[in-house]
Length: 418
Length: 199
Image (cartoon, rainbow over all chains, first blue to last red):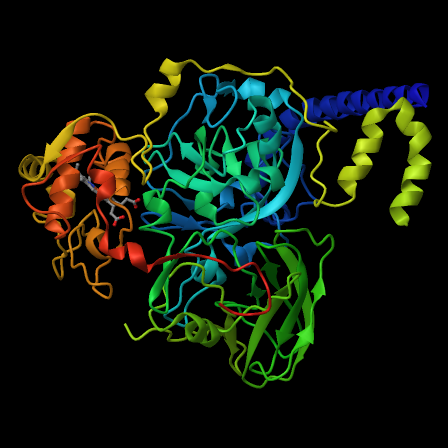
């Protein structure tokens, strides 16, 4: 078996190098000729027309760094404090790293990876520091999951895209070391119940996390979609807490302190908390199940006949069990197809084939997760939490209005007396 | 059942290539987040952190006062520091001025639970958080530049402006954790575990 594999590799290498050589020779021979004729071409109308035809002249050769087609221009939508993922421009669940949403509280730090260290101390047997090189030596693991900001909810006008409504959620394939592996290395004191995670940005961002999450599925990650994490996402390392609100996934991580009690940092008291009736709810870690139709959505247009309705669904508490789509203002619901593999705590792509009769209607989606939780309407959330409902942990059903002319509009709903 | 079969097939091979069998476990889904270490291993990577290294980064403060440094500060000196280092972004008195959009949020308001804007007086459950936050993040343009005495003074000033402590209080590591914030009684821990009920 071993010998076989070796042979295979040899053959492949041989082929590639021969081919590379030949194409190189051709390019060398042809390019100068093309250049010579360039002047004449411009005068010749018929040939000029051929320039639009990609089969009539060779294109550019290989380059060190690829880029998008000039015809594709997906962009994040930045405000002063965040930028949003163009969900309507994506066709599956991995967010290209340069389109991953951003939210930071004091800008993006520039960190030299060769100088960056992670300190783990507090209620541990041995306080330790790990360099990035140390972290990469530990057994690694790769996991695909979403990160969603807890403040990912906007409404207000019909001219809103999925990006405007809930563009603060993105998905990547993350690689790094299990936090439990590092905690084994330092040895955790039996009294420890929580840990503080701290970033090395100018906000020196801190959050307290229950220790159980470390033994469950928390990771320290250094790679995103196969390459080093982007600076906006925490280069060179960030904490990854699958399913937990985005803010807790501390970026630019430099310190973890084990503790018997929570720290009650500003971000877990003054922020990321919300009124529930007469009380203020804090420590909402998991992101509740949610879904949105990304096609068709504002400002797209549809035509009478078959329209494949598409979107994403996810839950911070596990897998998506099912997604239902309604094309009649929420009166009846049909099961959508889920794109396999359906991963835990991950954006899951859904599709539903609709034959539109051309009449004005509303289309909606709702998800049920594996705990049996069904995505609520805005009205249900208001009934459960009261009219002072805040902007955090809002996951209502999103409705799109389809007009008879095929135009699609967001349906804003009023939800507070303010 | 399916898994059993996989194991039977893989077993003889896995004796030769240990990594092959661990691959199969990962493929089983992301529920089993097993890396190649089968049990708790001490790898010997990394090094012991020195007490000096820990002290230079360990700036957090807990509600019970753990982490509060030596030093003190009063309302009067706090007000002077506020005027020179904070007012430019948070306003002369830290209050919200209708029609004016400041770079920083309002810091002074009412202590009534329903009062808006949400500020220290009506929305912050712990006074220690104020010390911790100002010391690590403010002033926004120059974080980490304040002395511990200055932070005590600013904390005293802002707590007094929010009608939580008297004007003659001198704050230090002993009395700061004793302060009971008006909003404290409003805060409840989320107890939802995931289930059909909407809460």
